[in-house]
Amino acid sequence: MTSKTILNETHRAQGAKMVDFGGWDMPIHYGSQIEEHHQVRRDAGMFDVSHMTVVDLHGERVRAFLRHLLANSVDKLKARGKALYSCMLDANGGVIDDLIVYFMDESFFRLVVNAATRDKDLAWIQQQAQAFGVQVKERPEFAMVAVQGPSARQRVVGLLRAEDRAAAEKVGRFAAVEVQSADGIPLFLARTGYTGEDGFEIVLPEQNAVTFWNALAQAGVKPAGLGARDTLRLEAGMNLYGQDMDESVSPYEAALAWTVALDAERDFIGRGVLEQQKADGAPRQMIALVMDEKGVLRHGQKVLTDQGEGEILSGTFSPTLGKAIAFARVPTGAPGAVRVDIRGKEVPVRVVKFPFVRDGQAQPGVLED
Image (cartoon, rainbow, N blue to C red; front, top):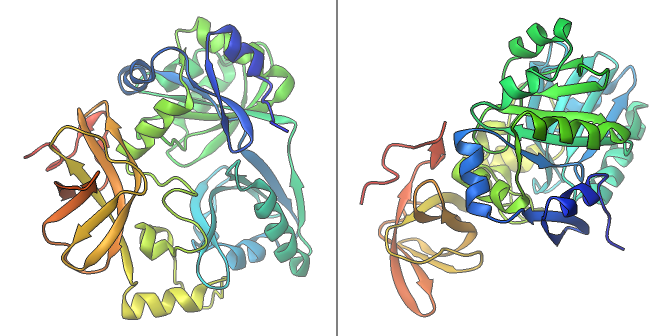
C-alpha cells in the first residue's frame, strides 16, 4: 500500500512525475530536474518532505535518554530551538538512521527521522526509551515543506505575521523558532537544510499544508522534486541513508566522524566499537570523486584503488559542475590513482574534498583537471 502526503493531488495538478520512494508516492520532478536544481542554487525552490517522520520525546529524563541513544552529544543543546545532527547506532556501531534533534525544553525534545526507516526507528527508540520513562509520540498530523535557495528565507519571512518576522530573520543555522503565518498558521521554522543552500524546513499542521504551499508558489517559490533534492544534497556532500550508510557502516566509515562525540562519562549505544575504530582506524573510508571524462558514476560500480577494491555509493551528474560526481567506500589508506570500472573500462577519477559545492560555487580543487 503506497502512502501519500497531503500535497499529493497538488503535485499532480502541477504536472509532477510521481514515483515510489520508500513506499511513498512522491514527485521526482515537475518537468525538468536540472531546471529545478538550478532554481534552488540560484533563487528558491520548495520540496514536499512530509514523508519525513516527526517524533516528540517527553519526560523528566529525556536528555539522559538522548545522551544514551545518540552518538553526538545533546549536551551541546542549551538554547530553545537549537538543533543537532546525529547518527543513532546499534550495539555494533552500525548506523540505524541519521536524524536531527531539536531542544524544546528540559522535558521535551523533537526528532526528525527518515521516511524509509520510520518503522525500525520508532521500534528502536521506544525500546530504548522504556528504561528512562520517556514518552515517544509520533506526530503524523504534521506536514513538512523545505524551502531552499539564496532567496528562500526572505520569501518565507514575507509570508509571516509582522510580529514574527524579526525572530524568523534572526534564527541561526541549525536552530528553529515557532512563528505564525500572516493568516495564523502555526509554523515550526528550522534552518537545517539538505541542499547546501540556506532556507527553512517548515513543520506545520497537515490541514494547512496546501494553503501554505500555494502561498509560497504565489511568492515566487517554484516546486522541486526528489530528483533535484538528490543532486543538490550530493553536491553539498550530504549522506543519504540506505545508499551511503546503513547498519553495516559506522560513522567513521561514512565520513561522519564530526558527528561522533566521545565525551567523558557518556555511555552511548555503540560507543565501544567506535572507540576501537578511532584507536585502530576504521577498515574502510568514504571518499568524494569527480570524473573529468564524459559519463555518469552510478551506485554499485566497482572502484579500484592502491589499497584494494571499493564501490560507488551515491553517484550522479552534477548540474552545477557539469561533471559526474560520487561518494565511494574504499579500503582505508592512500587510494593512489583511482579508477572506476564502467562497463569493463577503467576510467580515471579524481579524489577531492567534501563538499563539491558550497553556496552555489565549486569548491577548491573540484573543477581542476
